[in-house]
Image (tube, rainbow, N blue to C red; front, side):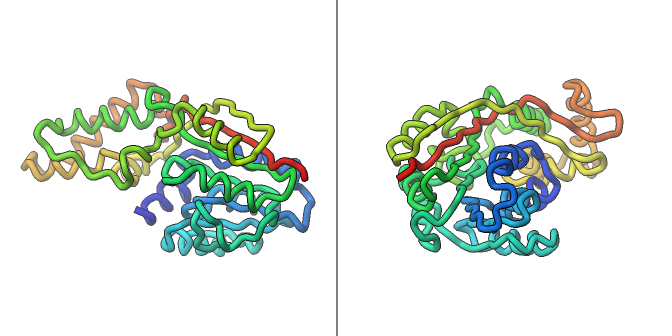
Length: 285
């Protein structure tokens, strides 16, 4: 899963605006600060850490994740991009033990809090490592009805190979920790306040999902958590013939074209996917 996510979501910039939002929030206040320390929690294979490290070359950006393979991929990505100011290490978001109290000017977490079991503990750890007045930037997904890309994948998979009678796929995380766990952001905002954070604000974002011409079908069939790969495997296992994969690709192309997402150059752009951008500060002491 880590390698697939790294390639199709991070390296190929599936949702480019998602990472840029963190740069837009933090670059103006940390620009030119050679002593600035930025902590990216649940960074997976290094985003938005890499985007921040590129935008703020004088700052030090720490990319952390609980999964060692993600940390390895993030370190390789930093080296490949020449980001000498980006550090990658394993850290538990609920404790952040490698980081001292009041050691970070900013903490960010991009689409990660939904999967952290004890969010209250994580927010308390964020507050602990932030310097007084330090910034917190978080994104989480809006409800499923504001996720046209993932709705499309589910509908396409069902059309490719109806799942009636098929055993449900085992999710990579408990049901209560799914992608849209904070579709209603209020519990998260309340938890941030309870952790001692202040100046808490929440605003909606609409993100474009983008896939390059000649790559979008491979992306759909290899992207972690996307149901298309499972549907294709069922289709091929059912003896639908050697052309099953090509027929499925043609079906996907028709449905993308009908939605207006297939661009003239052959790339795919799916607009209007909802996220919440949450910002806060550690109170001055």
